[in-house]
Amino acid sequence: MSLMSLRSRAALAAGLLVASALVFTGPARAAVYRLPAHGALIGRDRVIHSKAADTLLAIARKYSVGYWEIQAANPHVDMWLPGEGTRVVIPGRYIIPPVAHEGIVVNLAAHRLFYFPRRAGHDRPVVITYPVSPGEKGWDTPTGETRIVRKVPHPVWIPTPSILRAHAKAGDPIPHVWPAGPNNPMGEWALQTTMSGGEIYIHGTNNPMAIGMAVTHGCVRLYPEDIAALFPVVPVGTKVTIVNDPILATLQDGRLYLSIHPPLHSQDKPAKPNFAVISRVIHQALGGAAVAVDWARVRRMAARANGIPQLIGVQAAPLDAPQRAAAERRTGT
Image (tube, rainbow, N blue to C red; front, side):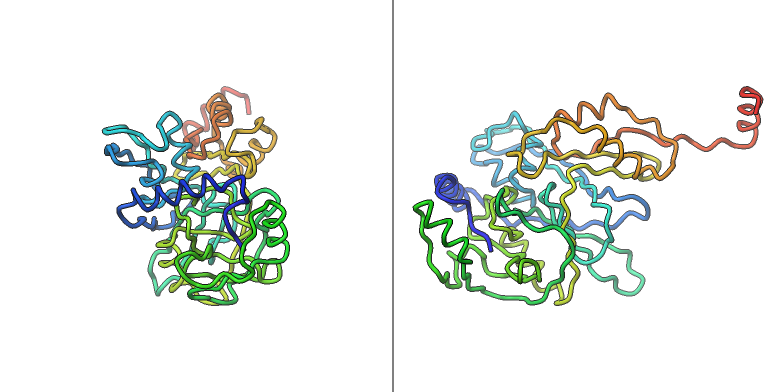
């Protein structure tokens, strides 16, 4: 189950709750996209200009973006007082992890959930995506495959013995039973999986402004309005795949895109680039296609690790018959 971290995060939690009450003025906008026929890049970025009363956190929630995403896209904008007329980038492009486009897919490193509804007839497949909060360090959300086994409206939270001990040790005791209602850390809707003996849920929260931080005790947490939209359309038995893929690449329409996120428990700070891993991910995405990769751009992306997909190469156009003949004459083949 999940809750904000222990006493070390209490002040932050209180501030975020107050901010949520004061500045949030509209519902999150779920991002629904048609799946590309080839490739895995979806969405688009946008730019807005903030109003005097805005915070980046309120803007993030309005556009269904998480804490880390909005911060990484706007590193020089004040989180609490961006100011009137400030240019704010709303990140909205995502590379779907290289797993089956089925059921629910969660990428912990990207703090993103992707839901692939069952197709109706000949409808083109779509994907719906939401920001999430995964487990914090020491309470890691498990990776692997599972399924939704139960849908729980208005859940009652019963903390595990380990969670109770951790809070007691930190001088922050919590109730053994947390009744349903507006103060419940699970929110109003919960989807139970088989992971960790059924203790891992996809659920809402009573602290929406922390969405996008790795702060849970292993569960996957969504904005209240996002889980309210997801809950009724996800059937029991839905497959859930959880991965931790900070580096993603895709070749789409002859263009090679790359995104690099910080490691999951790095406090959202870029790590020392592992170019062997980056190269392997790129080459897997290429699938043998001939693309000249802009490695200088890749190095800059690895240094920033802001998660935003960037174009790093264009596929070479295939040679027609006369061009192939000319090339063969030049090379003597």
